[in-house]
Image (tube, rainbow, N blue to C red; front, side):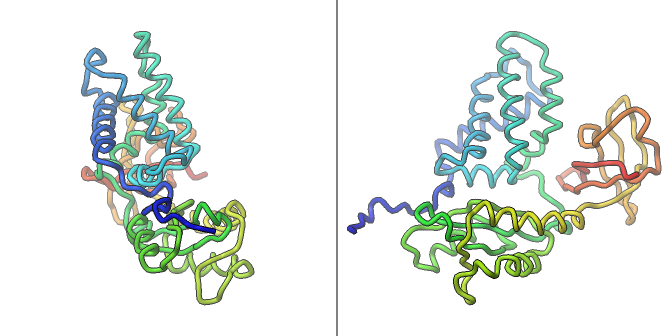
Length: 299
């Protein structure tokens, strides 16, 4: 079989860097959408083509069908596919409502509830997970030519940079690309325990390559993560909550305040936000302070 090296890409599929032309389009769509959600622009001044661009960004992450899909997903902060599908649906509804001059407040609230604001700020580099809660990633890599030969490992650094490093060091004919990533609290420990689950699929003892179907590997890794995720969540007391404003603050064991919006509190109602109740949540940190997301009341 004769190979034409012109047909071998420099990057693994999905991991191409965002081009300058697309970067400018993406940046404008992100900023315009943030201004709309924040109420800092009039509808008459808003160009709905930015919503179309934003929808396209999320769709490429859901479909994984473009050369830069992973790069975009990475800059979004790796939101789950289910969440991104809901966001795409709401973006379509928002675009149609603006076209027809209909009420958009409920749609905007739905987008905020699905963490669009956080995702867009993550893209702009203004918000990150608390480094005390997450210390790294576990990744699954493969080539399109051998989809069931998986390289599985961990990193505490940028995923794209790590994959680039692997492709440079291993001398593979076809570059590996990321197919799944998992945020973990203790990357080294997570890798060790996941490898123990996958031991029977390992090709060589001294290599991190496994002969296993991708979905089966994801299932086994998720089994571990279901256990670990319980350790990633924090617990704090509700200090106060204003139902009219729709937000309040938690207070943790170190006497540090954490902002809580009603959109992030599951089963929110007017009777369950009494001071002193315990709230379980994931912690995010942005330039203005600490934020509780995906929160729920502990019984």
